Image 1 (cartoon, rainbow, N blue to C red):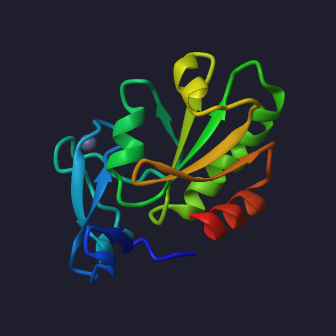
Image 2: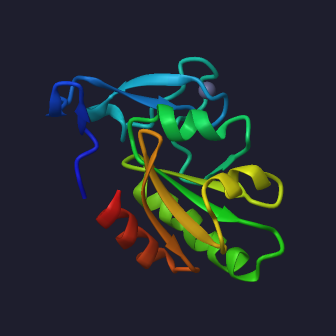
Image 3: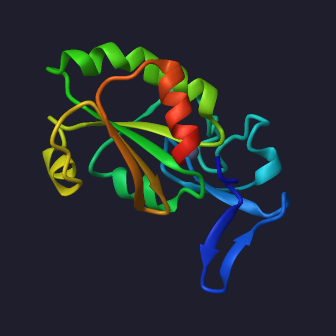
Length: 161
Ligand SMILES: [Zn+2]
């Protein structure tokens, strides 16, 4: 897995030091928090709503919050595109939730209901569900279709995020 602290910018590829803050979007209120990389694992709270920034569970995205979360987080965001009528999606949901507990705070896990938010699924070319897509700085970097267990989800995310 690549370090969360390394990313390309206008001057080339650089790695931030531990003291430099990362931008983390609050799952509750959507505020962008600046959190030192070394403090991500210390149960940071949102500066605006004072709730935990990491809750060891996937965040439910909507059309109102989707872009904010995938483009403003400095950590990768994995989105599980699912729908209530999809049996394999429901089977995978507990595994995805357990994966969130294992992958946070290195990665943000989120869910997008493609039945409620059809335009977002269409915009991202989601042809079958469940499909997981990893975003970094708003750009898709990997996708995987089909239901997976917790260990396989964690392995795939760590290999591709
Ligand atoms: Zn908040």
